[in-house]
Image 1: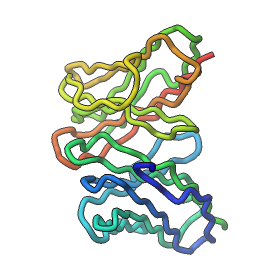
Image 2: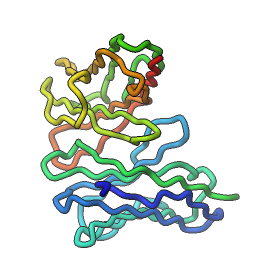
Image 3: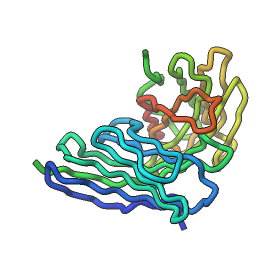
Image 4: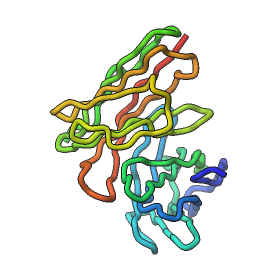
Length: 112
Length: 114
């Protein structure tokens, strides 16, 4: 079983819609959760992080964490074509905040 | 504030050679982590350095090594290169002293082993 699993996609949504990206993790002691966006040929860019159960909003992005279900998600509201990228979920285990385990990524395409 | 810089951006080597990659973190950041990204395995953690000490290590063979200097710049070295070492090598910098550390990636070094 993979330690961090994401719905592999690809995921296509029309412009203006809500894109929902999901991630589950196996290490119940995981402390920190990150969402990175990676454009083709570029390096990952940090867009959201969440440490506590619940929702965290930043502009059009909302991260949701449910530690009991070992589930973290990213919602992108009012999706734009410029949001088209691969979204990577990353989890750090307890005691090793910077040793990130990444999911395989979900490729998102926002159709104009 | 300048971001994370990595040099060189591209490298071509042959099997058996060794290579050294360099990473300069964001000013004030003391932690540097290295990752390997391949199409088959995705992004995998190599190691993390903080205050010139290796603090965490991933599941890679001993051919992969690194170090950090007093100015927080870091280098990683891969010896006896294999074809499977062809990858994008990314370094990420963070402040390093907090529990929940956000990491910021550099542009990467793309290594091709022929």
